[in-house]
Length: 169
Image 1 (cartoon, one colour):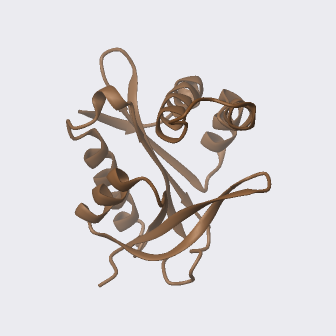
Image 2 (cartoon, helix red, strand yellow):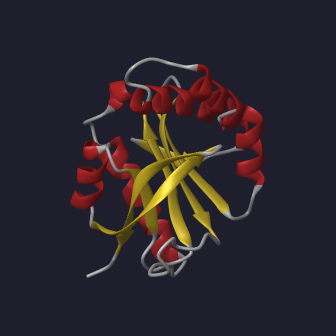
């Protein structure tokens, strides 16, 4: 597994991978205009270029011989929804579905937690869709515990998410 920091030249690959994972994970019963509009306006190369240039954002990608097959994104300066953790969120951890089960997600998460440790960040946190049992189980196996709930918002719609924190005993 080759993990490396993302660069501006990765923006279009990050956008394409994000669309693939987001649509495959959350649109189980078909694609409608509401979700298509969100994905096509929010997961764009231009938005990733902006994120990659932001000093509060840190991306690590998993690079195989043909391209990126996963990435993790850390965001600092983001308040914990419940006020119990750090200001650093594991904002995104996406791995192409065909590469699940080979350790890429675990490797990316471990690298993100190592970065947090090196920066003196205790108790990074994340949000995960409350219906995504596979992801919740993955994070639990890696030391995260549920500390609350929040909603992921798309326009006026809210989707229940579990807030999970690392390093809480």
